[in-house]
Every structure is written in C-alpha cells, then in structure tokens.
Amino acid sequence: MTKALVVEGLTKIYGEGHTAVTAVKDATLELADNEFVSLLGPSGSGKTTLISMIGALLTPTDGAIRIGGEDISGMSKKEQTRFRANRIGFVFQSFNLVPFLTARENLTVMGRVSDLPKKEIEERADQLLEELGLADRRDNLPEQLSGGERQRVAIGRALVTDPDLILVDEPTASLDTEMGTQVVKMLAKEIKERKKAGIMVTHDLRMVDYTDRTLEILDGRLR
Image (cartoon, rainbow, N blue to C red; front, top):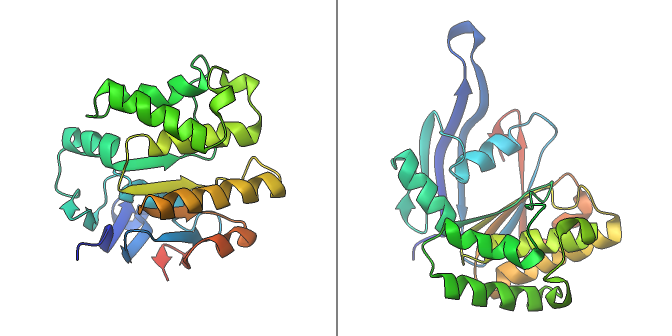
C-alpha cells in the first residue's frame, strides 16, 4: 500500500566548504493516510527547513520525497508549483490570509492556482466554512475576525483543494491556550475524517496529545 509520505535521506546544506552549515541531516520519515504527527525541536533545530523541503518550498541538497507515491524531488520548479497547489495544504503561523478578501474568498482564491473547477472549489469552500463554524462569517474580512476565526479560515484554505498532505507551522502561536486547543483538535478531526496525512510543527507540548505520534529534531537530525 502506498504511503501518504515517504522521506528518505533528506539533507539540506547551506553554503560550501568550511562555511557550510548542515540544517537537516539524513532525515527519514514515513506517514500513512489518516496519520497526524507533531514535530518538536528548539529554535534553529531544522524544523522549518524540514517541512519547507517536504512542502516543495525549498530544494534539498540530497534525498528523496514521495507524496502519494510521486517523487517530487526530481520535478522541475514548475511541476513542483503545480503539485504543491493541488496536493499539499499549508497552515501558516501568521495565518497569511489576504486582507482585502472575505473569509470565503480566501478559500475560493485557491481555485486560481489549483486544477479544480471553479464551481467545485466554491462548493467545497461553502462546505468547509459550514463545518468549521464560519458560515455566518463568510463575508467578513480577516480584520473583522477573531484570532481563532482567522486560524479556522486558514485551515479551510489548506483543505479546500483536497490535498494529500497538510503541513502546519505553529498553529497555536498567536492564540491563547483554550483557543489553541480548539484549533488543534479541529485540525486533527479534519485530517482524520478526510483520511489525510499531516505534520504539525509545535513548541507547545500540550498539543502533542492530539497527534498520533511525536517526532523530534535536534541539530538537524530527526528522531
């Protein structure tokens, strides 16, 4: 059975010669469908570098990444961009919502970069807003939403293209404990129900209870 994610010998080195710095060293990882894992590590440990490579945002120095059986390591930049738009969902720490678009438009805008028909994206956006408790906020701009509501919009945007893999970067950083817990529980629920794979970078040990297992990266080495 094809794994949702397979990472083999992933390495990232910045610079050359005596100035070279190894940010990630020989990382190996497998995720099944329906599996949600947390990734812990101190600042500078390689967390962001690792998920940036997995998300096709950063080119590895060495190693292979397969998502849904497809090797993205050998793809051209154009192919990776298209793959990322259709098969990978991102939830960023700072939400990254478009400030002049409504909650609904922040989801439907993904139709411009994905291969899904406009009507399907709109239908999926409406369904997700309903499921995330945002149906009555669909026409509000981000500045009119609370931190928790903005994070839920970001989750909806990550899911609207029906990706294989969800990458989440510090989803509770801008939220209080109660709201952060709600958001992570919601993420876990959506990933499980939709049979996706997910990786959550977090510094909050209280949130790892909502994931299936915990990985740790230290000095660029994944454990």
